[in-house]
Length: 438
Ligand SMILES: Nc1nc2c(ncn2[C@@H]2O[C@H](COP(=O)(O)OP(=O)(O)OP(=O)(O)O)[C@@H](O)[C@H]2O)c(=O)[nH]1
Ligand SMILES: [Mg+2]
Image (cartoon, rainbow, N blue to C red; front, top):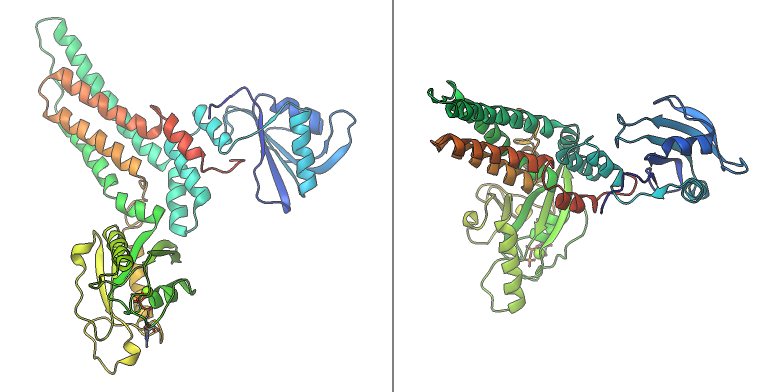
């Protein structure tokens, strides 16, 4: 999508119609003129006023509602903006949009186009745009907090500080080089120069170390329920999901596909997956099921290894990058402490409170413990690591020119994160997930 900042774009920014109120957003150079034609004047800046919304020619009233004007460049998009709060009826909104397009020279916005204008006009950087996209998509409390921190510039602020300091360091090297050009005294970097580079490196490291938690908040904690056939894995998933999503039967080898269910526990998203039971089998479908089960296990943050009362010991620690909790299932049919370690029954509910408590604790660990999390995307980790390695290169390098070049590359990596450099591809991808009107 190529933005055209000459266009005045409009969209219904509120939700599905009919609704109590419909909010139509307008942004672009024709904003003032549009307001004059539609409501007779341009209201005072950022003041909500009651007006009749009229057709421009005959002055027929379409609806009565509220209008507000946000002059650029200090508006959300950086251009003149307005909002019309009309009654959220389908015909009302259709007529207003129709008049705006057919009589007043506006155009319907594409998905994410208001935010795109904001980015093009320097009102938001790429990390803030990403935060905003995540905020609209947020379904859990932890996702909301992460997305809000980012959309309000939590990440931009850190990146800005680092970039500024790196540019200063770079300038100091340039000054040294200029000085040595002029003759006798060779330039020397001030004391503490390397320490300042190391400090930025450490700060970047601290932020990268949050990445796993950020990823778990944003994408969900991946939990796989695995174990022997018939151990009760599907029954456990159904209990956790509070719905009969998986087929349960006394036939061993019932589950073949990986079945994933998102669950919000205490504001944290978990993605629970039921998998095929693991055993020696010659059945090609079952073998494929086990291959998928192992694939999901390998990619999991947590594996719940379930074994039935009579099953052999189970060790899945080599099968995953995450942690493994082993439980004995069906303890309702056992007497006393006939099982070793943790036990649960998804049928009687015994041990389930303990499991949920442990899961909530797992979800809380690391989330917002010291500082709010600001990194969550693969892109964040990639460019932060790239900035870091450029900084480290500049430390090890004796030649001043090469040290300056490494610093320049570190600043460039940060510029890629904020979208000052090469934003196009990321933006197109990002806005394809935005809704119209944002
Ligand atoms: N008494 C009792 N029976 C259970 C419990 N959990 C599961 N079962 C029974 O055990 C049998 C197998 O349960 P499933 O949930 O299908 O087991 P699974 O591990 O998914 O089995 P596969 O998909 O074949 O690997 C069913 O008859 C369930 O009703 C439990 O906690 N207590
Ligand atoms: Mg099953």
